[in-house]
Length: 626
Image (cartoon, rainbow, N blue to C red; front, side):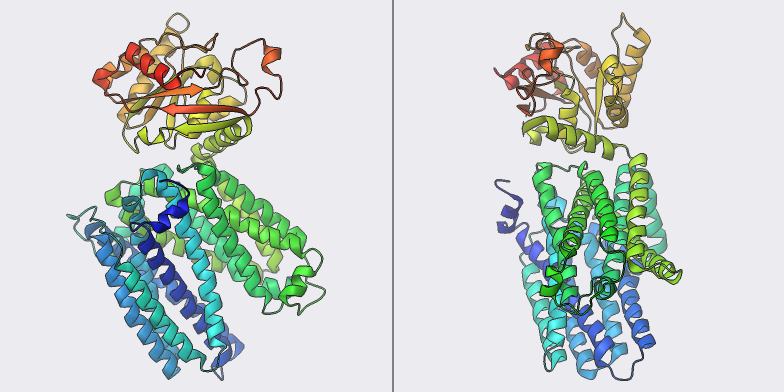
């Protein structure tokens, strides 16, 4: 993909789908907010207790279909061609919006609640299609950018739909305006869906299981064998837990603790939504169009840090109330609150976009829709638990800022637990920070790294940071084979252990360790993993590539797999190479933040790969830049 992620909006394989899902999210929120305003302000005779009851009932009716129908929707998305399924779903939306218009005309709350339930069913059917179609429509290096645009577009559509629903209901004959808008937007969504290219069924022979309980259980059991995917799914669901608590408290928080009137509430919501959109779009910039899960710990850290600061910025009720949005922005201390809300949203984008992309990348295509369906079920469950927990904590005496503080602290606990289960997140985060802090790295040829399947990576060995740079550049988990003394370096040992690096020694030093290393390499390749070796066997002492040892031939003889040659350029004059004395190597700023490059060549078939031929390919990739 040339240019930025926004180039996707000019392509037929992405733009119609993006517009379809954005219009759907916009329409859902126009209807939901219009219904909430109708319940709260325009139906005569409802007590405050009845308003609370119907508002919570409306939220529950929209979520309920995700429990009942997501598992079946996931199967349907696998079995049938996706673009046609999307068109049928969007055509059904026109009928649902017509029913909504009838409900507004009748002024029948039970009728409108029934329509809301059907809209939830439509959203549950669309969910697995929404994320499983992206890997079929996008190239691997477009996956993060595509997910970022979808997330940003969805939250922007939610914000605009919520504002539009309120604005239309405020007009004279507001229900008529809302009804007309709902139908027109649904028609526009259906027309957009007609432009989505075909996306063939990924499991056309799948036998449908109509029992949602057993099918959901099957999907969850599948996830148990794919720990990174399972924890990514749980991470996404946690994001919805965190976000739903914050969003549910914003109206009362705005009125009681920020002192704002009804014009401030949309501003607060806008800051949160725009932050998520901005964070989502920045993921593609920071990840260099790869699935950079190192951003996930950064996002989790930001959600907690800025959540804590939000509490300390305003722990008590506002001394002055009734501020409009201009007065609110001008009041002392409120700029800090705005920055916190925006930063929490940005951090949420960093947290969720890589997780979605990881789920799509590492789930087999024929299972992806069902995994997304299971994720949607868990999302709904986490949101229900979030609502129950919030009600319980508020009932126990916590105020709104304290509830938000507790959520931020709980976020840190959950994040630590997830990252303990899957150390790869932290390892890539550390590698990402070190690579960004110490070097200006340019990567070329990343498309030569296969999305799945076993392969051996061979690379020249220039500095103690080589493994970190390769780890930060290659989007897939990579097992590194490294000299045991480097493996045991203080500090870096944590990263190497987290990435399950394989320590090795020479046959004269520790023959048992060497044999154990070759056994681990073979086992890793048998499981379809990437293994990276530095065939020179030691750091270069003069900047030149030394003769490749024949260990790579032994690996390929036992397990014939493709070999991917890589070459580091510019590392010899950077920090942590063996050029000059130790004192000279630490001089700044001559080698600090050095411009370095990683050049990746096309995969070499195992029958063509020898130590000598691989050395020649790495030399050619490096060229004259040592």
